[in-house]
Length: 277
Image (cartoon, rainbow, N blue to C red; front, top):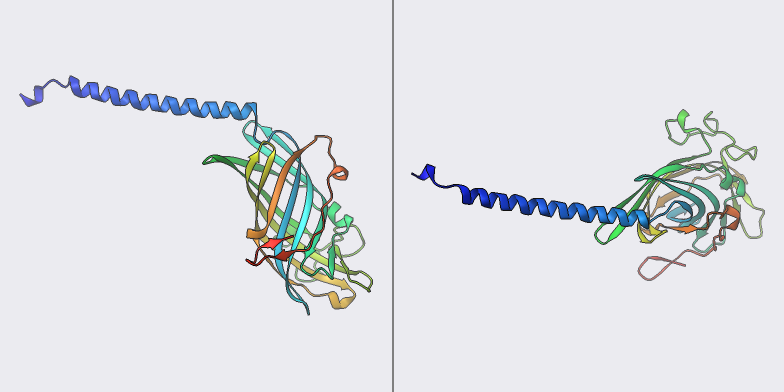
């Protein structure tokens, strides 16, 4: 009868399918273990010291000057360490310049401003994507010139707000930036700022990453100025698609003093509206 027919061929076919599936899974596992071993022998981003250059581009509307494009360029000394599969990175900003179209008036970041910036510590992620590896680092929020825990993170609305303090130690409220104006004494801006940036790039070779900066937040407020007619807050629109970074391993004994200084260039646009130097 049909229900008593020999089922050994079915069992044999089922066994063959299971064997093939198990063989495929073992082959995949062996392949993945091989990749992990290769990475352990020659890590993509080894422990050590790195140079991080960031070029954050934005459009700025300045009173009586209209819209122009500028880039804030910083060079930082980075320490990167691995704890198993967890990568941790920290950085210290060493220098910072502002590049601006038609740079008649230059924004200057005093060394006191640079030294007062936070030295953040954050996790990094490296993930396989096709034939390459992607890098990601969320730098977190940076607050300049005020105590964010007293405002919920928001910029204070008035110079009299108790959250504002002498952030860079120059006896002035907030953070001090300088304006270099030809034929005139330098102007001073007392500012508050907050920003949030995420680095997203590709590992080009062991110890080197390049990519874009996802500018998630870029706000500032001028709370005072000298001379007073400079006391106006410009409108700023960040441009993540034009903002770039590079991360390169350098000798372990490197310091801020030994890093190559930033070359100041004028921000320009080509015929397609892209930035060029």
